[in-house]
Amino acid sequence: RPRPTAMARWIRWIAFSGVVLAALAALGAHAVIAWYIGAPVAAKSPEGTSTMCAITFSSGGPPAEVLKHACNVPTPVWQEGTGTLLIKIHYAALNPVDSKTRARANESAWLGNLPTIPGADLSGVVERADEGSTFTTGDRVMGMGPAIPVQFWGTYAEYIVLAEKHITKVPAGIGMEQAAAIPLVGMTVAQAFRYAGFEPVQALALATTEATEGRAEGRHKGRGKREDGRRKRVLIHAAAGGVGHVAVQYASRVLGLEVVGTASPGASTDLAIKSGATAVVDYRSHKFEEADAVVGQGGVDVIFDVIGFEYESRAFNARLLDRQKGGVYINIFKDEHDLPRTFLGVARWLLGLGPTYGLAAVLPEAAVMHELAKLVEDGSLVYSCSNHLALLSRRSPDPNPINRP
Image 1 (tube, rainbow, N blue to C red):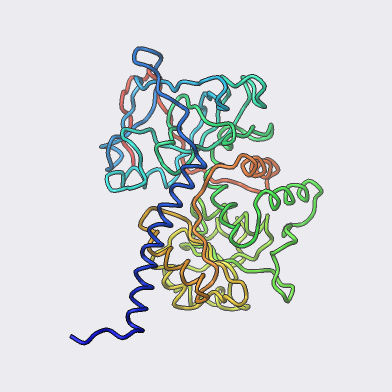
Image 2 (image 1 turned 180 degrees about the vertical axis):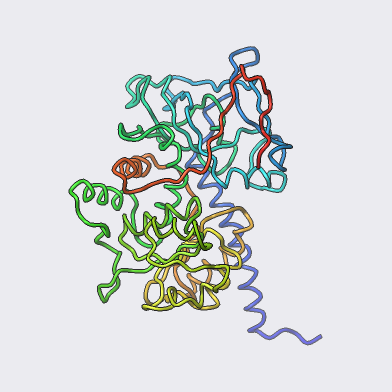
């Protein structure tokens, strides 16, 4: 067999180094996230002490098979001086990531020890707080448990202990139901647009100020325009979805961008337009990468993608984003299967072969939650809730009411 040329050896070495660096980057990212989150402070109660009702699962699978309603779950222990709050939960939001995490629990490398209590979002009332804390007993609060690793979740329950930095007070003008819907979805969107140069606290605070003063939409005056003065354009996939309809509102009403969405015809398209999209592509009958709304008017400057995989490949193959003009591709993290494609996107960006590439994985930020809640209060952001479910108490005649998808 002929010996490989020097160029071939260099290519193999670079490829091998890339794989090693990608693996180290994945481990490093996990370590950084774990460092940010810190060790769990909600130690379980000793056997024989108080219990609460909660929904748990011990393995992956369909909800009717694996979700269990129990009222013998140990109540979390709150400890003085830990910078945490004991919260009586009033509402918990059910997000698509909850069902995906549960369905894939058997194969997920991110999921912690089982059994576990799902749910990241909450609204509730403070029951215990440190002396000198900015929170006091009886405060209405909203918050989010750290999303990665997932074992720190646990809002499908009556009580939870969370760090104060993951909690903010609920404004007087919104209800507890609205408050519980805000954190995970809102922060996913706001933090994702950091890759496009929009710092969420400043952008949201500016939007809140200008809404109070009665100014027009298109409020962000920084990076929201092209060099020719026209508004930047963003393509948002699944524009009527749980994350998508909030992303449309945030991009159009807070950042002042022109939004093109993808959605199915009918009610979904209507919701996307109501949320602020100027054009919607029917993904069932049209290829978004060929639609006039996407490629016309100078194309798009940002792609906000909650779908990924095939959609990402189609966007890059069609060269929808121009690196020289500051194009940004935002991939919303879904699970560990995203990582190989993400490393490729980041490598293209770093080697100067593609647009800025960002992988958005949400982390709780109280300041961002606070500003988002104020925009919900003044009506600038509207969350769509599709259903309501009750966490039945220990007095319920049905001990296991989990029977729906």
